[in-house]
Image (cartoon, rainbow, N blue to C red; front, top):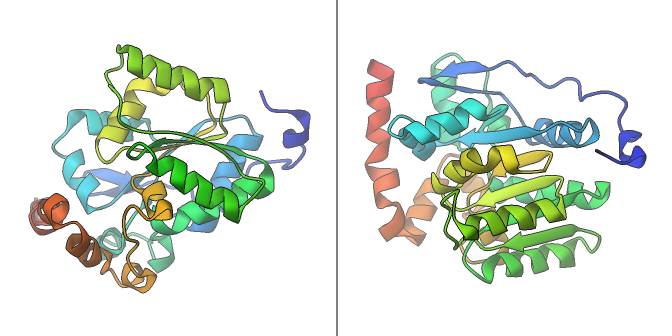
Amino acid sequence: MLSSKKMLTVERPAVGISRKSHRFLGTWLNALTVIDLNALLKEAIVTDERYVIANHNMHSLYVYHHDRKMRDFYAKADFIHADGMAIVLLAKLLGLPLQREHRVTYADWVYSIMAEAAQNNWRIFYLGSKPGVAEQGACVLRQKHPSLQIEVAHGYFDADPNSDDNQQVVETINRYRPDILMVGMSMPRQEHWIADNLAELKTHVILPSGAAIDYVAGAVPTPPRWAGRWGLEWLFRLVAEPARLWQRYLVEPWFILKLLLF
């Protein structure tokens, strides 16, 4: 349960957020801005609720339609925001009320999350990245926000739900009792892990957050922010990591034509 001090910070859940779910190519979306998402973080924490806030980009849409466990994860999500201009443009094409400001990627949102956490005394746990990278990212964030409470653990462990490795990770998270758990172990591994361990995790908000801390640490180049706003971020990422991302950006998007036509 939350302390009385936290309970006094907000008297009622956040208002003004559109909670309507919009059907989208076999799945669903919410029209949420960074401001809306930050309000949902606060709402979950101060009302002692638990929200799973997922996201969709072109890659997740492809995986969703080819991976049963991925569909199980999204079925457990409370909100799904648009991660990428391609999703926003497709949604607009289908008549959904998404605008440019509803594109929210972790390359941008991670800094807003940390500022809110430092200001509101929220505890963050980040699970993911290669050994040493998350620690480096956390160090950068603590320098920027000295009051930030953040702990990390790398994502290189046996994620089988029954493994000793996995149980130790869950116990470490629960001992820390974070307000926000960020899981950055690439897609769909991070979504699979959340779905497998959701019942045991003691936290208010769970965010599958991809390379969020990798960007902060400088382990992955951050594309120019104007590129994201104009839907070109994928091109910069492809150039930076062609061996890993060529299929994601050059092959998988053709699957969307099938969804649109049928």
